Length: 45
Image (cartoon, rainbow, N blue to C red; front, side, top):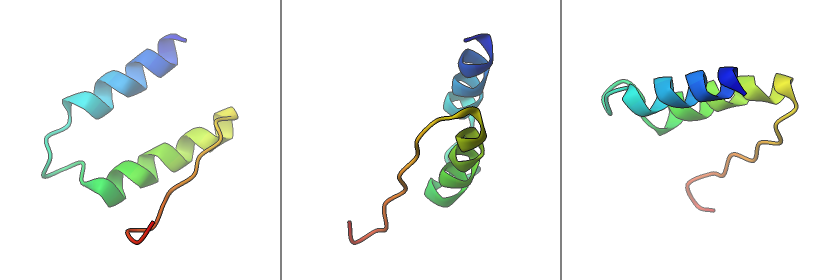
């Protein structure tokens, strides 16, 4: 649980010019290793 809080804090505190949608999606993909089911939608979706 503590690791999840740490990841969430890091994502929230990133400035928008660093954490744009593609960068955010790439960081979230790494969480799939922890068993999180991730669906990343294309712009048309």
